[in-house]
Image (cartoon, rainbow, N blue to C red; front, side, top):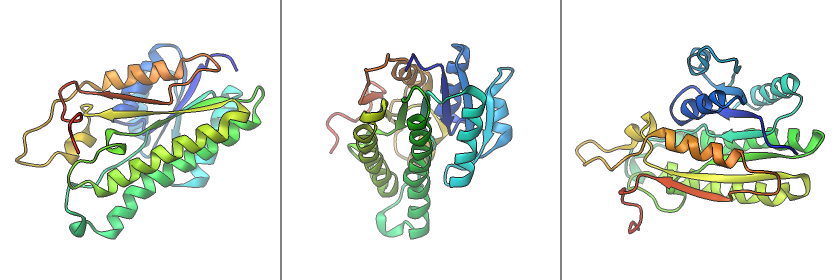
Length: 240
């Protein structure tokens, strides 16, 4: 497999997905924008020639259709940034509804699996075989914030998924790595900050996009298995 020049990005309508998509577009990559809101994907693309693929990552048929459209347009799929995710409002475990817990798991785990499954199938069947899957993890895959049981559980599961994909992909030239992000300035971070508690230090989301670009641009035979990128002074080291 040559250096990847096309990539599908889930959750591309906002936040880290949007910033990352624009960086790849600026660097001349063919980019497929996946997300639930068509207008938001158009806003991400701006004047760039991106592939607009509205879909919900929890909808297996819609995801499969998006990958088929990308493969048809490009001839292959070189990379997937498996980025879509959500969090629940911070609360104690006994105050979190089962339905909200299930919603977080459905997007962050099942949705990520559905997209990874579609990518794996395409990358294994194309010629030459291979590709790269980059999963959006979190520092919550290592240490939790208080009141984050659903999100933390989901991100621990993502780590297991990354490891399994890496192992299962070896025979087919499919690399899988994970970026664990700490306190990038996005709406998701603002949603999980507790009112009345001093906000932690943050970093610009462009730092995350730069790291994803580095991961995606590695030559065949090289992989960043796990990468942590975070605001320097956030209370990560020493937590737990």
